[in-house]
Amino acid sequence: MKQIFESENIRFVAVSERLVQDYLIMVNDIEHVEKFIGGWHEPFTEEQEIRWVQKKLAEKVPVFSMLEKKSGRFIGNVELMDVADGTGELGIAITAEMQDRGFGTEAVRAITEYGIKQLNLCRIFLRTNPNNSRAIHVYEKCSFREYDRTEEHVFMEYIP
Image (cartoon, rainbow, N blue to C red; front, side, top):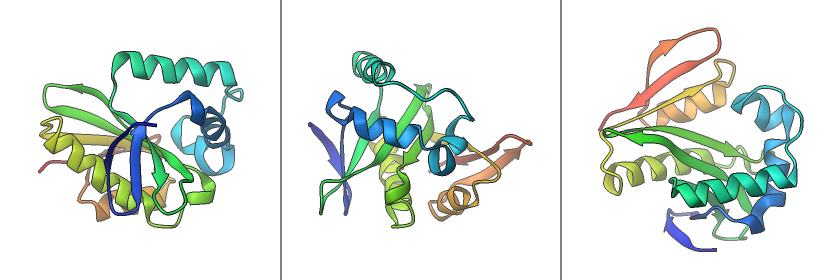
């Protein structure tokens, strides 16, 4: 897998069909991951995940799989979505097994730096579930500030 960039403990690589089984475990984990990234749905299939990978690669979207440098284990995915006019929306998902180890903070800092330095973004925003207090804490540690809130979402932004 082609490494695009790295941080202290994470290798950020291009999404890959070789990681589809890892993606499926993550996105179909209703309790730890899926409930925070989209709400309940029928489980994703291998075919759907392969199509997702192919689409992201064809569109050259800045989406990366994260691998722990030390073990090579899959951590999750991070993406800058809808990049246009100097802005992009941050999305991140980390497997249950790799949560609460500092990878979220490290990944958010790294993708924010990548967005600013490599993609020339002047604003990175995100939305998260208001019940996802761990994520909100991570975003605040990474200098994201809340600018709006609804029943469904907390909206945050980073402006360098």
